[in-house]
Amino acid sequence: MNKSLGWVKILYILMAVLYIIAGITFFVNPITSEVVLGTFIGAMMVVYGIMMVVAYFTASNFKSVWALLLGIALIVLGLVVWTNLFDSMNVIGVFVGIAFLFSGAYKTYASFQFKDLGLPGWVWILITGIATLIVGGIMVFNPSVSGGYFTILVGASFLTDGIADLILGLTAF
Image (cartoon, rainbow, N blue to C red):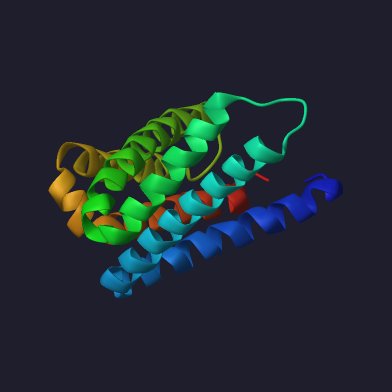
């Protein structure tokens, strides 16, 4: 292994462990995690929206009405998430499910690339890729479940991604 990449391996493994810890936390306390996650998402939307509106009114050279409209929309959507937390999580769950489908498809594809390279552990990456595809499919095609069990599904994805990344960090670097 290249010594200059040693710190990358350590950070990669550390991030994998943090993913695993987050996944376990989401499993152990899903309702509280859903409230915290939804509140965080709503707050970030409001803060980013405010920043865009302020930037529009303080910019001297470049003003885009689209930035102003996007800022206002983010503020409104953030407030909707805060006031309708559990209903909003259904919609957010579908979007996250789409991301999981892409992540699972990539991991499944990558596992075969790792197999062709002769890397050990490629089967585990394939398994976690398929599991991520399943989680994403549940979230996209059954939105009521994605809202009610949003954090459990996110926790499952964090666990599968963390395990896959841990295996990759330990074997590929």
